[in-house]
Amino acid sequence: MNDSISRFAPHAFALLRIVAGVLFAMHGSQKLLGFPGDKPPVEIMSLMGLAGIIELAGGLLIAIGLLTRPAAFLSSGTMAVAYFMAHAGQHPLPIINQGETAVLYCFVFLYIWAHGAGIWSVDSMISRNRVR
Image (cartoon, rainbow, N blue to C red):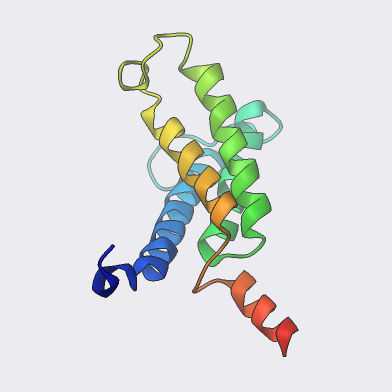
């Protein structure tokens, strides 16, 4: 790859992690708090309530880059379960069963789990301070 472009790869990855985390957290806040939007909150002691907690907490952790790998792994698994529970039975293709968002989150978070937090993260700040 052209070095003049590839030098921005860490920054692009950090932006992907931050944006995906914030958007994922918003799914959780919508489930738990009814915000943003006008849907009523779900029962917290339900499967959807558990999903909302994982989405909100996991999304915030991913966005700030704290405990990124475990948060991304749990979030990826949550989206895989959500896809198979809510979408896969309707049709095998995600574009038809409206599960493409769950599939995309699943694989983005799987990539973040494999890659680690990267720059602009609390995890990288902690590891830098340990080296000193």
